[in-house]
Amino acid sequence: MDNLKTQGISLPKLGLGTYRMQGDVCRAAVESALTLGYRHIDTAEMYGNEDAIGAAIAASKVARNDLHVTTKVWNENLTPDAMRRAFDTSLKKLRLDHVDLYLVHWPARNMNLRAMFETLSKLKDEGRTRAIGVANFNIALLKTVVEDIKAPIACNQIEYHAMLDQTKVRGYLAKHAIPLVAYCPLAQGRFASDETMAKIGRKHDASAAQVALKWLLDQDGVAAIPKASRAESQQANLDALKVELDDDDRKAIAALRKDMRCVNPGFAPAWD
Image 1 (spheres, one colour):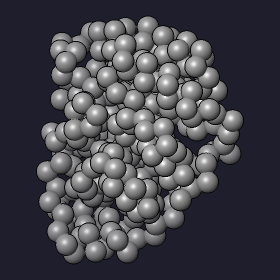
Image 2 (tube, one colour):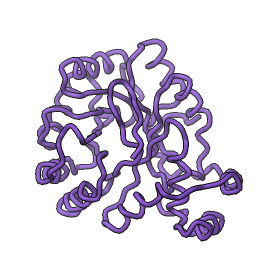
Image 3 (cartoon, one colour):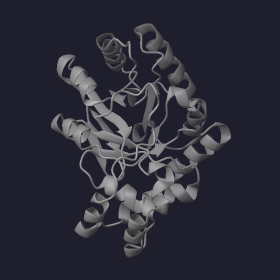
Image 4 (cartoon, one colour):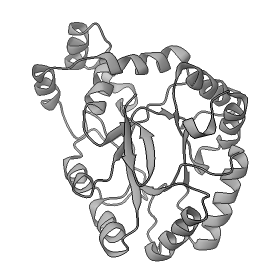
């Protein structure tokens, strides 16, 4: 599997998203994914499943150095003391002595970005996280973090798929050599009923979801973390890597609607 090199870490382009997975279901899903060959696991404080993921990792035979683990701090814990407490709790639940990437999950309206990134940088300097980054940041916030604070962020994790245009954010990230990690890469199942994607899939003996996933993974500087609890779905996502899209396929995908945002909570920033 291809990896993205960023801020001293190697990020597998295809990972396992775990939002809304809980308990034994989550543990079984992560164990299955690791067995199939996944080496990038994405979680968050808010998901409430770090303990299940920690148990799965502990039970696996995968060497820690071969595994990439991302977790995130919730936007209610962005003061320095709260962030440290949240980080300590996440690490304990994951049963790890470090994570590979620690992200600010969502921006908050009254956050102190400079203080936040001083704390994150200290966690990195202490070797407790190998890299730091953000999720759900718009260009204005990214400019402050990247250009004013000069924080060494390793990615921006945002919703991105073939029905949501992220050209502006992608352009900014590419200019600064920062990867985009796409969550909801399959638009929460909406591609399954899209005839354009289904037609392209039939052409390549693939599913519409595999086409959508490969469209993302073909892009430079883009990783994707589809959620998949069943081994069959996890394998199907791995098999998407074998799909070879051509220019006609990409042209058809470019003509799809581009305003389908699946995740837009009331505390979200003003999207670009």
